[in-house]
Image (tube, rainbow, N blue to C red):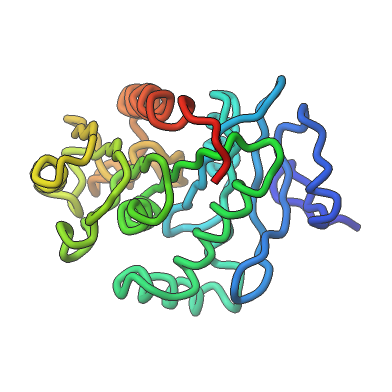
Length: 260
């Protein structure tokens, strides 16, 4: 029996490489330096090639919300690949390891994200331009890896901001960042990121949303409690942020078609 993730069947990579272009979503295995991991792939309808986007999920991990995000990105005309950052070992051990590697800015978690980038670049359906988008923990990874071969980076509330931010963003790609002004983890984050990107002349669109908190673009469980604690979904902020992201990606990803 084929295992499923949501309404997405998991298929062997040999089959995944032969995806029909009208397949909306599937799960595949991608090769990484530490062995294969599963990843959610969203494919636009119509004729490619398309730019790609590596999507890095939040600290909660794989959830139906990841499907909705991938579908949104694919509907906008991008290949969307979400690697499972907790694919190895027990969940608690995975979370501990991934957060440790997030703090040290090295390790298998970063390798997995870069492997997802390379997988997209190797796809015949990819234009050769790949961006990165991340949420919460994933937003921090999107900032840390912005100098590592991506055409644009879209961190959603990547807070707390990475340590040694100026050094971290040396050679960074263009950045479109979205924050909730009620995020208890991100006080002052928009102004700090704006200060660094301006000093380094990194093209950037940085916005904080009044009334929005952490995880404002993720439809997580227990929303009433989350809103009280400065978290929670905010539809108006979400729609505005995605509009900015796709406009930014359209400028920095869709223009180029040379394969890397």
